[in-house]
Length: 258
Image 1 (cartoon, helix red, strand yellow):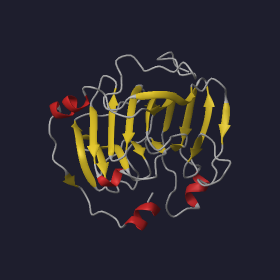
Image 2 (cartoon, one colour; image 1 turned 180 degrees about the horizontal axis):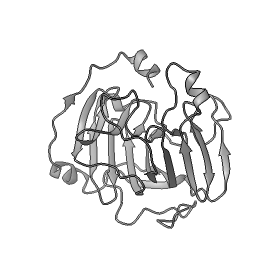
Image 3 (tube, rainbow, N blue to C red; image 1 turned 90 degrees about the vertical axis):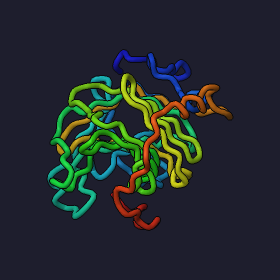
Image 4 (spheres, rainbow, N blue to C red; image 1 turned 135 degrees about the vertical axis):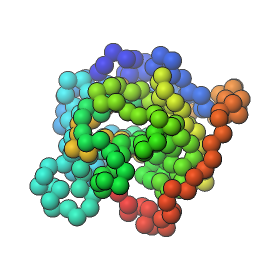
């Protein structure tokens, strides 16, 4: 419950200097400021009792000191699994409609720095739909992926996350478009057929063997139409070339991937 912005229904508001650029917000449909301490337990994704937050891959999460705090799975859990070991904190926000605007804050408290090719761990990420759209970090900065994480649509070179620093993010998702912006940072836009999917829950992931914190989460439904200056904004963006970073997986294989 950091004093960044008010995140309680029905009074949820946008963070300062962070407003929707593509879509038009309608009503807040979910908000959590983590003011009430609680433990979070993972359940099957299709369970009728799944809550707003569902820890992934055995990672451990709790609400304490006004934030949602996560860490990797236990050593026993990791030893018992060949894959999906939960070596870095990751959690799913299930309370997302098919199309929405989402705002939240997060920080990486600590953890092993991700270096491509050195470990089997995954870089920190914001995933919009499981393997549908993903903002993640690589050797050259941050990038927006599509097509089962195989295609880079947008990039912010040299943009990196600092441990201990809070970041506020806004995600706009509709049909085959995704727009993600960081307060006082870059924005990412992607339009791709793979984005048009029924999978819309959001997953957040931190650093290997580290701790991650999340706060001030709000989800809005959206109205028909777009922001009046949306097209001008998109045209003014620096063009980026799509880059195939790996071979796309068949649809069924992509669903089973971590």
